[in-house]
Length: 236
Image (cartoon, rainbow, N blue to C red; front, side, top):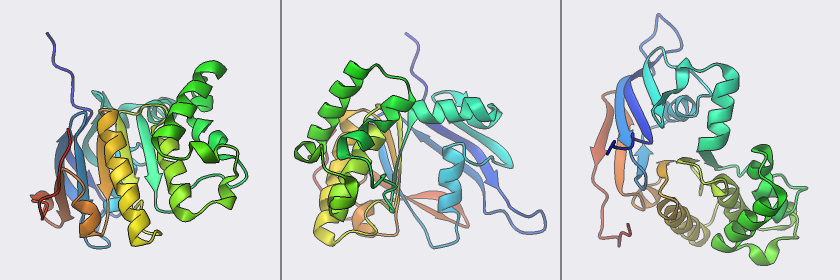
């Protein structure tokens, strides 16, 4: 039986923006399988956003490789990269990026429409995801009418409705109050585990990071592990 490749693998990843300056980071290595959920922390300026852009194929490394489902992302042309990202990656952002003049249902269904999923299947999967993230009762409401916590639930539903293998979350609770933030982090973790996705959370918050299976620190020495504090109950 052939083992399934890691969902995400970084191999000696290096990125610089000027040849006369030190690299943003160099020789980063990481492997994530389905169901693994990690948090990446680090000071401002260490390259966390740059790392996300490389993982998603929005930028290209100067050396090293990003492999997503065994495919070297930087070796693809722009069209193939876009298609791989659309099929295999889900994004959750701090700024939500939900479309305010679409309904909850329309926002969550959008990735399925872009992938050309048939209407009946699209409606079924959208309904299931609205139920999973707790917004089924808001299906016909417009996103602009909802609270920040509700909108972030929509963002998670939209990011996961197409069952991506990799979920990238960039400070997803930075604009939320502590109670809403805790609910969102719990929901995000539960959905990553339920879909056997690989999840990567970028955050400045140790409280948020402690909801992940493990914490990685990005600094001048690269990516290295830090044990989560406390005795949080883990699933999966």
